[in-house]
Length: 345
Image (cartoon, rainbow, N blue to C red):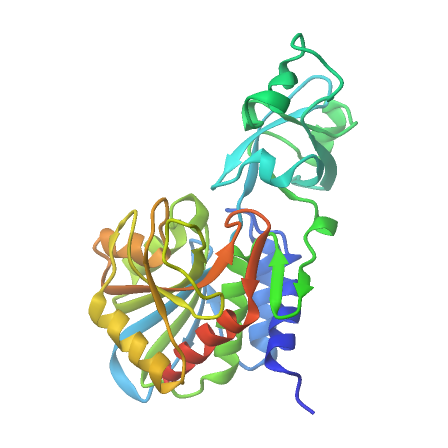
């Protein structure tokens, strides 16, 4: 008996989330993606920017359609290693220390991964201690917290921990949690979209036109991978798979209906392409929601603003606690898959 789609999706997302992939240090998830694609008979390659590209030949020749899902996650980057072995980090992408809280993080050294504790200091203090403000006035910030390794500076040097080393939330804290048809986890942005793209690669055999499924690198620090890819290749249409942050300021009402963006911080999306995706949703018996987002960008909007693509769209799944411990409905993820499967076929 075949595995229920949402169970398969949850299992695949769980595997992907456990692959550390802070921007620019994406080797773990690269190995998983390439192995998975090979197992389903889909050829793929990596380019010089770290993107993984799976080309599926279409029935008709002509301009290439690309669908992207970025494979990097937010985290921290080491600024300095103190003489006492404590490590100072700064944001990598849209991360904040209060989201992770005190607890285990992993420092991805050149030779060893070092588990350590993101630390804010003691609570049993008065105004004489700088961390007192966390209890009363301010959230902790990267320049006022530290990572405690209980190792010497020389031991950390031997492990390859240095300025530029990436930090992510500890692996044992990352396993997704399921609540019925909801999934909760760090890094659903954008491991859930990567899972959808992998399942599309398995399912789509003869798209209407040549199709690139692109697992993009370094999106969280400026869509670097997508900009390189779209600069190198002529792409007529680009669809980015993303999260759609739920907030009182946006009219995103359903947890199960995907979201088409009309605008974000980088500019307008193409309404003609949005219309075609909405038509595909109706053909699949699904509904879409629309939103205009602030403080948000995608591979699609950034590439279109740079003049690399003429038409771009962003299809997202509603998510609470974006860039934190995110919660999404598996039904919305399945709907994104069904809409794209219909559109691409």
